[in-house]
Image 1 (cartoon, one colour):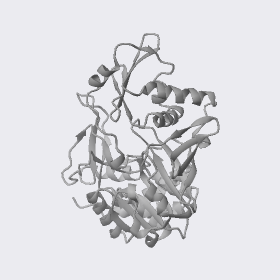
Image 2 (cartoon, one colour):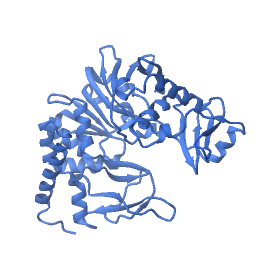
Image 3 (cartoon, helix red, strand yellow):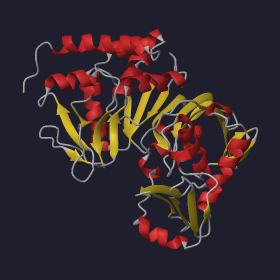
Image 4 (cartoon, helix red, strand yellow):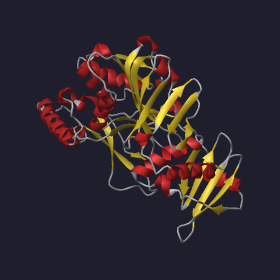
Length: 400
């Protein structure tokens, strides 16, 4: 298909409309970032992406429909200039965008993050002219282009673990005359050839703060990253690196989540029924119910991250009404089942009582007055990484 001659004109108008909407929503308070959004053509970075269909398939799986200019020009261009995350890859499988097909289910492994969040990340990291920055997770390259537009290409290094994805991003960036330093690399280890950096911003999440990032940041420099874990609890933190190589910073508010760095992703754990058999027949009444950490609320989002610190190797899955906790490292398991009155019974087996550990965190959280994320400080030092609050016991992150 030959694209319409007025594509760039249409795209420019849509960029302006998107920038206006983001500004009205408070996402573009900085004029310099607004100018970058108005200039960078997002459609050049997303030749194809997936959108969810209105209905699931017969197995209850989400059907993901491919969207390209060839399939539906109007839908493709209009969606590219909405404040939406566009999924570009599932399960690490690179699509053939010349002959794309629908996907049924699957785990997203690459995307173009919604523009408001991209700008929010750069802004929250206090990125300014004169800074040298490392971006972890090039993805489609759109975020990289915004940084190049603001700082100049020479100040920007971006790394991506997926070589094919980086190749596509490089083609788009170079085609628009942006020339940042690009490399195929694992974000856990940063990128020493271009260190040291004034700012490091990660577009993926980590179970624990990679120590290599501290070593690659100038004293007084800042690292913005998302912490996650195998319970899929998330928190963002802005760390300031000290001259002694330690770092500390407060958690940020909001409910932002990113895909895990691939080396920090949760392992497969098998059949939940097999794990349930390890919990035995005896049970007790749970002091706290699973919805406290699974409900679609900001507090539950925050609580799941805190709970995760108590059981860093546990995963959670729901089968019917039963909620299973599985720890592949220690072999511990817990199963929670509700009764008709809304009470929950918990059965636990293995060396760790997983739900009891979570309950201790929830007890402490309630006793402290249910403090928000911004009241917690993360300390990273030689002895480990701990989340601290003045009225709660310290919560450790998993070892690196």
